[in-house]
Amino acid sequence: MVGSPTRAGASPEKTGPLAGLKVIEMAGLGPVPFAALMLSEMGAGVLRIERAESGQPLLSLPEEYDLDRHGRSILKLDLKRPAGAELLLRLVAKADILVEGFRPGVMERLGLGPDVVLRRNPALIYGRLTGFGQDGPLSARAGHDITYLAYAGLLHALGRQGAPPVPPLNLIADQGGGAMMLIAGVLAALFQRSVTGKGQVIDASMIEGASMLASPIHAYMAAGLWSDRRGENLLDSGAPFYDTYETADARHIAVGCLEPRFFAEFARLLPLDNHFVGSQYDKSSWPAMRAAIAGRIKTRTRDEWAALFAATDACVAPVLSLAEARAHPHNRARQSFVTSGRLERPRPAPRFSQSPQTLATAPAAADRQPAGILAGFGLSEEEIGALAKAGVLGR
Image 1 (cartoon, helix red, strand yellow):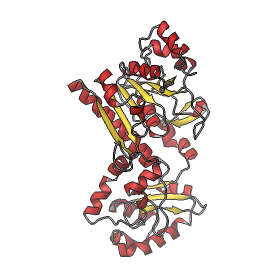
Image 2: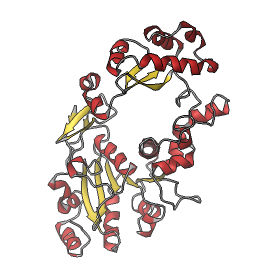
Image 3: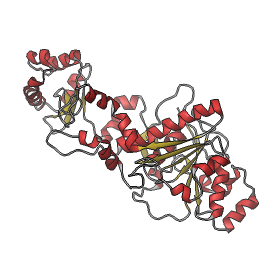
Image 4: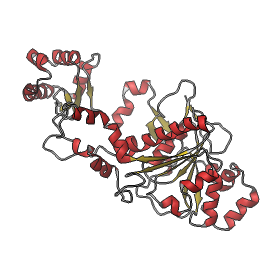
């Protein structure tokens, strides 16, 4: 079940475990908006603060597809004016969480750093997400997912032996090590606040978040079970039973039969010579095993292999395109993708048994009206009119 969206500060029509929570998001690109989207779809009322006068974004989407704005109220403020910064402080005083992804020092220069904000609201959770962290030699540097993965050592590990490293979209540093770690920190701080009554600052770094995701790999290396060279290990295409293979129709299947019993089932159905079954983890047999697997898989189409392995635990799957994944029978049965207007997208995740989530949609006209938004935070009509007249509020 998916609920319907409302604006921050409005009557709590939103559903989800965070319903009633007020979040202020400082507009930016990448992982912070994604974190705010997830908080919104968990029920939080999110108010997105955008610049009063902002240029064309790097990646401009029609609003119906712009998930950076879905599920929020939108308020444009001129924070360089003292009255604009003061207004934000008034809003923060009634919020539970603030999240921002600026370079270190930006919020401080606006007079909105943690010291100032927490004096106004000592219970606030102040979530900060950067690539390099709030301090250190690189903290002021710009970067993107590929930059942070390079410094974390992870980009070096992604790709095949003898080939250049491969960027994994922006899923590891931005979304996994960034947005997800920010959310984890914010929710942990909320729990602690329920005990102490005090807020705190979350310093989330995408390098450190991505590195944390790779903690098991560091442990394998320390134990001598992982090579610091890509394409030579169990999970990085080094093992022939954990890799992708081209099929007769120039598509691919994914083979992931790590456990001996799953590999035995894979070998039986392929079929693969039985002597490989007994030497699955003998690296000296891997080149011949890989050649044998590749030769067999080239004899049938992707969908023929998918049908053969469909009812087994051989851990073989067709490599689907993004469009094919939306149409797959399992995903259809689970309603894993939902439609919002003309946008078909992944449904909010994870699922909660007692608190169905809210599907974020494009902001309605009421979600962009400063008067209604600010009234929800307790400002009077006279105060709102004065702010508009002073040019603090954008359109």
